[in-house]
Amino acid sequence: MQYRIHPALAGAFVFGLACFSCSARIDGTVREGGQADLAVRTALEPRMSALIRSFQAALGSGPAELILDGPAIGRSMAAAPGIGSVSLKNSGPAALEGDIKVAHAGDFLSAGEKKFITFTEISGGVPSGSIVIALDRETAPEVIALLSADAVDYLSALMAPAATGEILSRQEYLELVASLYGKAVADEISSARIRAYLDFPGPVVSVRSGTASGRRAEFEVPLLDLLVLDRPLRYEVNW
Figure 1 (cartoon, one colour):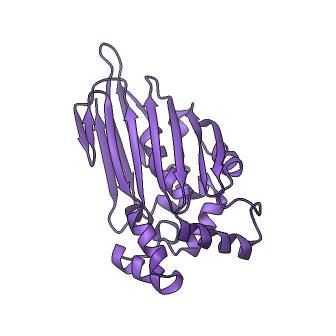
Figure 2: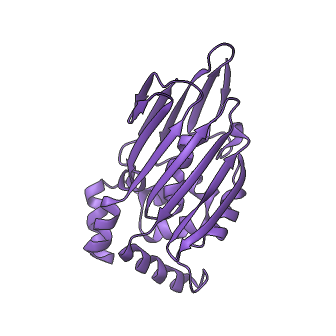
Figure 3: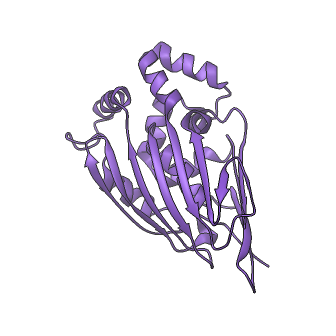
């Protein structure tokens, strides 16, 4: 039995965090041996686009024509542990798409001894294994910092507990955002979703916090749950 930290499902979640506050779709393939390929697409909603633009102006960062800088985010992500390569491009000023390849699953987004994903692969015969992801307020800030320094700044400006570690309920957080940035921004955060469609080496036999058919597991993660983490998130797939 061989144990590794596996990247694919984690990439779906942390990519949404790295892109500050948006809806995202991730299509991924998990391969035997611990490698994975992810195709990602994401875009900011109009009110959040305007807010991020104001953050950029205050921080004096980012190209004037871009709200999300795909190549810059890609360069930052490529330096994170366990990522083989990242290619992100802008499909609009506040939208990006591209591919992420993970080559070193055992190191993926590890922060010293802290691991937030457990991957078990059973050698021999029909491919089988499991993946468990556990994300909470303790692990989230370090994971975000590994992906993008800008993400830390923007999420802190948004007062997201995933970055600050503050204890807030989801309702309290939305009320705080609405009081400072307006109800429209809070509504966009509340409605944003990260959708992940992941194919595994063998047929999925059970899944927690998602659905499955054949080799594919599907997850829909409210961005609000990731930003607030008022309860630890746990996702599991067995194949």
